[in-house]
Image 1 (cartoon, rainbow, N blue to C red):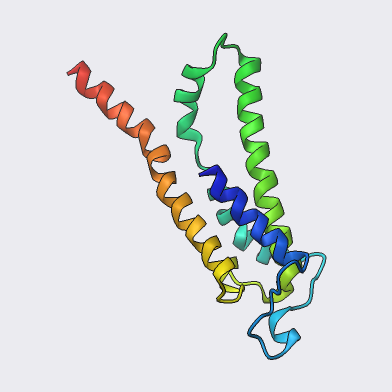
Image 2: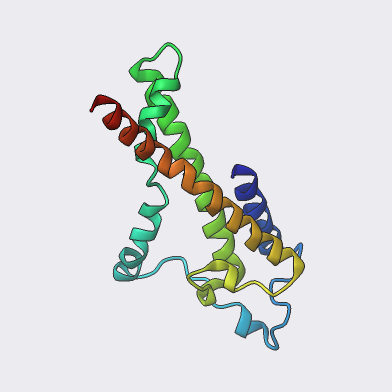
Length: 154
């Protein structure tokens, strides 16, 4: 799944830095790229906050991760948690900033809807499909383990 995340992020960065034409198929440059403003109003920012928070909802996976850490200590657990959250934050930040720099105020809720219908973007969409497909087992494994432990106790 991480490979697909890196491929998607690399594609978005490539379009943001004009390594590929992000406005292919648009008649007018302004129709493609909107204004880039340094900040928005508070209400608009808070409106998008649940999407950002949802991106970090893997907290149920902490129990199997803690069980896998050798020589467990609070310091090692905190290091693992901070590294994972930090890594996710950096990747999300890069994708968000580069997507906004590419399309400005014309960026859509699903950033891939802005990009042209080309083979490169199709590969990026396939990466998201595989990433989401591989995401569900990671999210459901702790639930499965919990249910199995309850069944074994009965």
